[in-house]
Length: 229
Image (cartoon, rainbow, N blue to C red; front, top):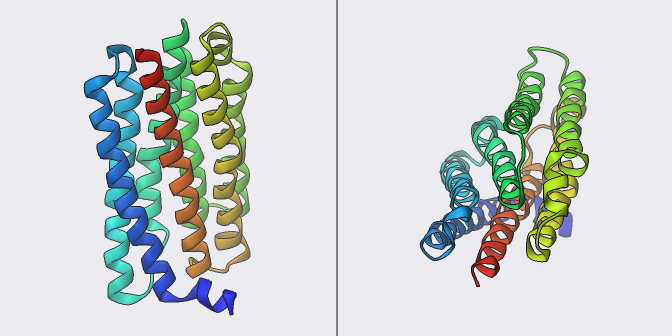
């Protein structure tokens, strides 16, 4: 019974609608945070807000497409991912830069890795090259980003910072480690195994986006608020 419920069109439309409202609401909260947090937090907060806004627009379009035909491809997700995931990586750079000096080369390398991570999945999905290769390349670029977060200059800067910043960085990095793992896994099931962008895949992607986007933005806002006082 649960399997049938999970795959029903009502569950998918509900998940997409909830994601739309949640993304827009959290984007508004992040933007409002710009008015009462200190100036040094404005770049990571603004990046988080814009990422949420872009994702909200994607989910709004996805909801309309689903309601019209009860079908949805992964194309819209790639449009959002090409914007959202590089912005999240950029937000982490500026988050760490608040704690201390981080070379600008780290920004460009991690930003390029985030774009290539999404591009690899897209090219595999589009069958421009082997889908399995797309998954493997995507994982490689993701691991490079994690390497910078755990062992690079950003981690060094954070280690010398205040407890709220260290704690916030820890949780965001954990989300980008565990939460982002769902994307290559679902891509493998969707594209390599060939289940297609079916209802369970859509719902799981949506849940992952809710956690990976909203939780990260709220952590940035919470740390910015605590650092203000």
